[in-house]
Amino acid sequence: MSLKKILAMSAALILFGASSVANGQSFSVSDQTATVGSASVAVSWSWTAGSDVTAFGVDIVFDNTFLTPQTTTSGGFETVDGCLANVPAGVSLKSCNLINASTIRVSLQNLGTPAASIASLAPGGTITFDIASTAVVGASSNFALTLASVVPGGTSVTLDNGAENEAGIVAATAPILSVAPTTQAFAAANGSTDTKTFTVTNTGNADGLTVAAALSGADDDNFSIVSGGNTCPTAAPGLAQAATCTIQVQFAPDAVDTFSASLDLTGNGGTANVALTGTGSAGPAGAITITPAGTFDFGELLTGIEEETQVFTATNTGAAGSVVTISSAALNLLFGSPLSIVAN
Image (tube, rainbow, N blue to C red; front, side, top):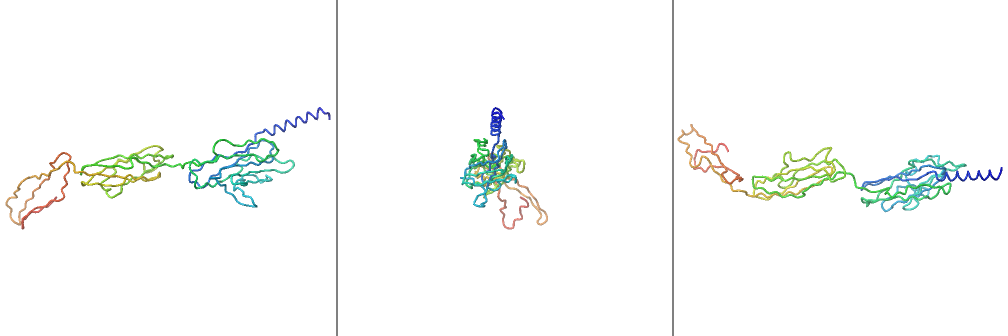
């Protein structure tokens, strides 16, 4: 074979090798979020084959201040549970271990001559992290990926090291019940009423707020929810995010006094209690006029045989808006008088 042919074959081999190295293999970790208060969060890793890579090792660095991978100790190693769940049995050597408090190493290798390349895995497995109970909304870990080893050596592997947070704690998705005002004073003259309106808002991050309203307290019988004055839904589909409904409460004092009660709201978005106070005043002065007035003569009647009935009408002839309460009616009689009240 001529030197010219040998040089040409060598050049072809070099070009083929360069093409193989640049043929698009990558390792990535999925993005995931968990609501605040969650006990754990699971992420998955994937391998995309692009060339004749027969072995690789990738380190996954995470924030161990609030994330702890679930592991099983075996043979002196802390093996990450579920991390290799989808890796075929045909892969010669495989491991996924916690190599320090904040680093997991995923390693796969095929043996043999020639060794088979590592096929695509989407995903290769799942890593479940326990979340610290102290984790708050906004806590996050942007997993940093580092290529620990690759065969053939020098092969380029694209690592998903995006700027996004790949595991984060977010607020729970739920409706939230809010009401305004949170306290309310009423005032009305004895016998009249005062009505106030309360606005309920779904301030949560989910639709479907349901609300039940009731009154309680020492003087709750002097307050009432106006008939037809409650527009809040008690069942699905409920109140959408940022939507409002209203509840009207009426105060009706029955004395010149002070009163207190509570408007109690419950539902799937929490509870709220609105303190209610009321003042009952005397109001305009009233006056009672009885008709017929003065002296009324029943006339002469036969004892034990005849009787006569007369209706007397009590009228409030006081100032406009006044209220008069008649607590009782009685006769001031001489001993032995045959008069009596037959109806009141």
